Length: 180
Picture 1 (tube, rainbow, N blue to C red):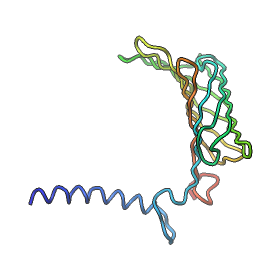
Picture 2 (cartoon, rainbow, N blue to C red; picture 1 turned 45 degrees about the vertical axis):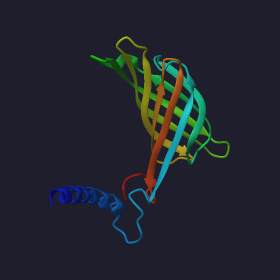
Picture 3 (spheres, rainbow, N blue to C red; picture 1 turned 180 degrees about the vertical axis):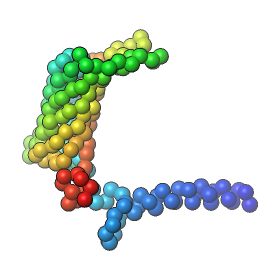
Picture 4 (spheres, helix red, strand yellow; picture 1 turned 90 degrees about the vertical axis):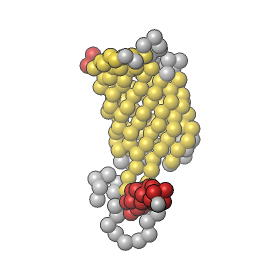
């Protein structure tokens, strides 16, 4: 009997959250195919090179390698970081420093383009006995082929290679992202 109850309890525990996600929180009638059924997702994967994100001013450019609605094309980014106001934390694995930053990001697929004005932070991570790596985390209002507020993550390794992602989304009929 015990062998039968454990799988049943596990199935019930998994079914409750799955049912909640399938409902999606909608308050209107109709067919729902999961939590993300009525949402437009923005996603672009970026890959390129750049000047050091460790400087007060940095640039990056390269290719859009995947995404929706901009699945291919080029990108360019410009970052300004205020390292004078950085906060630093040292622990057994290394040191992390983060500073306020602003920037712009332009995406162009040839037929569609978008731009973002960004606010966020640039962080450095220096592992104990290793090379420093940098990342920018930010968000901002999009214009062009993208709408609403989108988020940007750019990571630069010690060779100057930059990889990143632009993501966001909004509910149909909710272009201002205020939840109604």
